[in-house]
Image (cartoon, rainbow, N blue to C red):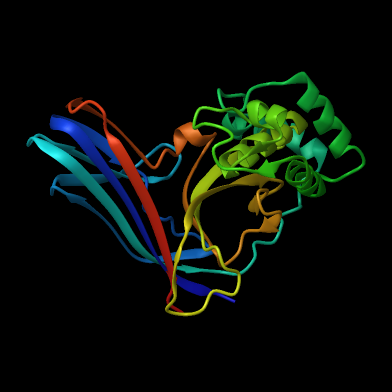
Length: 280
């Protein structure tokens, strides 16, 4: 069953004194693919700015803008209407021998390597070997995600934006970003190319039409086992009609929703809201 969703993501900065210049880029535009169709999408700013779009190295649409008039507030709103499909089925054609093939390793090497958020760890590597034993790659992905879900407790504020997957595992708690990073670490240790996906999650599985809910930015993973397919380790569920995909990369650093630099106005306050409405 497919859904049509409206997503409104609003970010507001308030500065203690006027900002004279700011340069920014945002990743708020959902992607169109075989599971998801973007009907309309726009990014608006207040004060108004001149913006341009480009597609980054990972295939994510980026909106870039700068502002040179003095201002004490900056509001950026990403609004989209998206049609999403049903649960994503695993793609299980590849064997472990296929994944070790030089051509596959070369093509997906960036999704097999270690990063600041997904660092190498001996204990997790040992757990990865244990989890994959006797399983095909597609089943090993499920085993890794299920293990992460069973080991972790979802707790806001227990980790920070710079926490690694290893940090979260040692604390045994975290948020969706941490669940995704920890799962990526296990999959890459197994030799399965895996990438970080950011987007949104409608919080009600039985969401009523026309009802607006306070949604949330969300993160999950995609694994390559003969083709790319996605899974949500935070909730231990397949990606389905409640998920809206925005950006993809090696880890969170490649998909940051809003980043920029500015001069003046020290002591900024930040408010972020996400609202999702099931239209049909």
